[in-house]
Amino acid sequence: MITENIKQILTQIPNNVKLVAVSKTKPLADLEEAYSAGQRDFGENKVQELTEKFEHLPKDIRWHFIGHLQTNKVKYIAPFVHLIHSVDSLKLLNEIDKEAKKNNRVIDCLLEFFIADEETKYGLDLSDMDDFVGAQNFVPQRNIRICGVMGMATFTNDTEQIRREFQSLHQIFQVLKEKYFADQPHFCEISMGMSDDYRLAIDEGSTMIRVGSTIFGKRR
Ligand SMILES: *Cc1c(COP(=O)(O)O)cnc(C)c1O
Image (cartoon, rainbow, N blue to C red):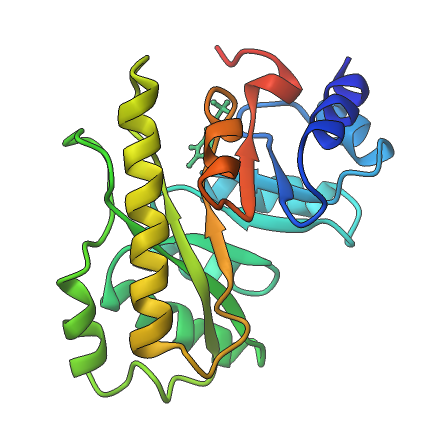
């Protein structure tokens, strides 16, 4: 099933769009099956669950952190995490930089933007960016690399609303690219789209989709 689901999705999406298999709450056996099918990018949203899975699974897996990240937990994932999708404050960015430095590595990050009309979601808005840049240490930080943006659409059946929200994230990406990252080719990722809306997200410029239940089945 899992193998079939992955193949099915891969045939539907363009080559330049990366598939992150969101394996949160799922047992190791499910991840192993996906791994056998060739999947290498996995997404988790809890630090402890991520570190446990990291310990048990092959070391060529690229682990994506997609949940809300508390600064005091950065140290547990800093040695190995591939991409942190959910940077929503300068404080968190600085902490990631510090822990990356301790591990003698550069950690790739995405800035999470608030595009939904739900109070429960996290994220920056464009006006926060002046603080980021105003805080001198934005550009010179050497142990983090900002590779793009991430966002989650509202949980709704209104596809036009979802489409507008994805468009707004694409626009934010473009503004940032022009204003702050014009000379940085690695600033190229737009992480948007989940099981129910990844086709819409790709239409609107997604470069990375985060798909859980369509691969692994419903979560309890
Ligand atoms: C759980 C989760 C997903 C995957 O959701 P599905 O609807 O199961 O595909 C994607 N992104 C984030 C941030 C998540 O927390």
